[in-house]
Amino acid sequence: MISLIVNKRRVDLDVDPSTPLLWVLRDNLGLNGTKYGCGMAQCGACTVHVDGQAVRSCVAPVSRAAGREITTIEGLSPDLSHPLQRAWIEVDVPQCGYCQSGQIMSAAVLLKEKPKPTDEDIDQALTGNICRCGTYPRIRRAVHRAAELAAEGGRP
Image (cartoon, rainbow, N blue to C red; front, side, top):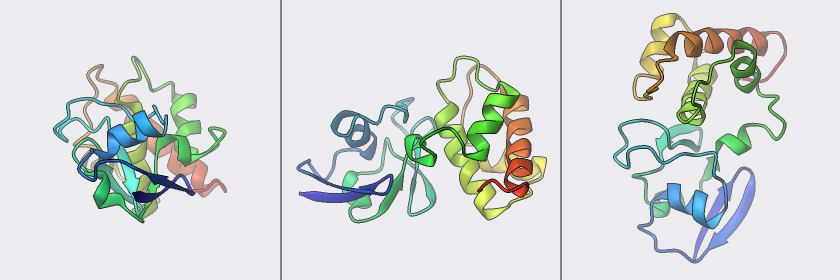
């Protein structure tokens, strides 16, 4: 039995401790916002937060997350009110949308650490997140917009 805290809710699961966290989130908990991209921690589509840090869930065994706070894209906000989600919609970032939850989760860690990031900060923080559609300029604009929204009173 493994106990996790997922999106502020405690869950106890009878799973193999070596199962990748991604599959536990998707298959056992039905949290399908976190995507499977490459399975090798190279594309960033599977990014979630574990104790506030961006983690590639496709290669992280669920045992690594036992007893820790896990946040998925679904846990960022229940109603799309997080500044990043609002900015993503306002800037119309997604094209196919597949990488976007990973992009947002990586950007959330960046904004928590640097509330007013530069272009270089954004590029560096999101380097490991691949967008096959090439929406990088819109992603960068949305991160800047999210920083503005957070400064206006939204949460980072």
